[in-house]
Length: 515
View 1: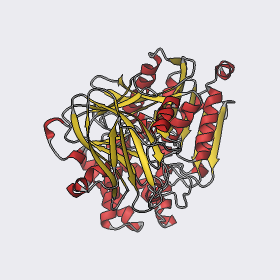
View 2: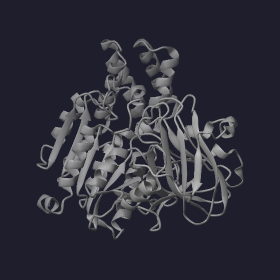
View 3: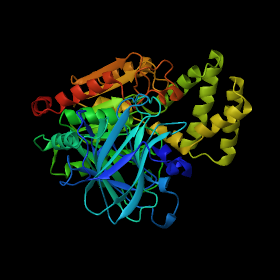
View 4: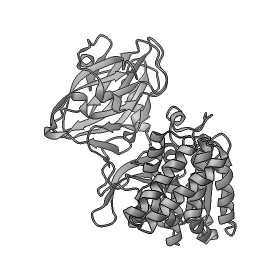
């Protein structure tokens, strides 16, 4: 909810006729049932934060938001926000009660507001936070109808002098009801508790992760290590899968890529280094007493779907592997096919595709062979000429050269995902979508079946109508479309499949049978 940090000062000066606030004041009776959201739902922006456990709040989950220090700024330059559940009708009242404490007394202005573009604030109140835990209540009436997910509770903390720790939140339709809220908090049993962990990898690299531990399940627990795809990705890419696995009693680990978020090291799309990081995450989880080191699964999307089999191929103790839109192939032949697919997807003339791909592979081979600048110059010129001949403009062709003429692409000849899958004898689930524009299901699914043909515990599934990001409602499968279709990997079909499959694969009896 980073948008809450960009509002003008005017919003903080709104009058308060629609808002009420209390710190332990009596609340009028009300029959509306309260809905409690765990502290892990808070979305922190603009500063560092840590998810921790505290037995003094319902559900034990908390998130500690660090101060911005001497950097100055405005109240909304950092803070936390949480979406209000469900839609709101015009004139409908909603209340929120949340647990909070501060390292030192801190005055903050909390609010409830709609989403873009207006960010209409309909409740606002100033409160003073203290070192002890307290419940803060705010209530307001929606001035207009708000669709689900377009309104939020916000706690701006840009001027806080010390850390502020937030606990669970109870939302209630209508006026706040103390008895109802108290009962809701007393009955609150989150499916999981999120806690932040650090993972040592190579020298100079420490990964920052979040471990989601199911509540009320006998340990030690099975765990799925979640591996992100290509790009500057941090935690948060598997929200629905995390929830489903928690319901199945399976812990999950998400982590920021090296050099991203709170992880140290230099960000580079070096698949060998990223594979080493994933292996380090597995090793760190095996050292935790609440987890079962014999029941570790790997779940990777896109590039993560290449890394997961590579880690498992080198670690026979991995219990199961799930690849979601993971490429299947070895070396330059696979890279040739991938480049060909991109030319087809760009609707280039059929006669121009092979000459252009040949030129690209010649350039990549030159990089692999460490040829000198004099030898590389004509290879680059040829590729630009071939791209222009296929219908791209000069500017587009030079941009294409810049994308291909990189160390990252040259390292792709080391790709061995087909061989890695072929080496696995543990349960493997490979999933593809028919609308995926990057990993073409009609080619990749058969390649996966071929690579896994010798593994009786392997399964390949192709979902009709799902793209690279596995969201319902896709029609084109493009990146632009994915931005408006909800959570990444949020398709109920996918979430159910992964949840059911991992539940069975990581069950103690199923695991022993697999071995």
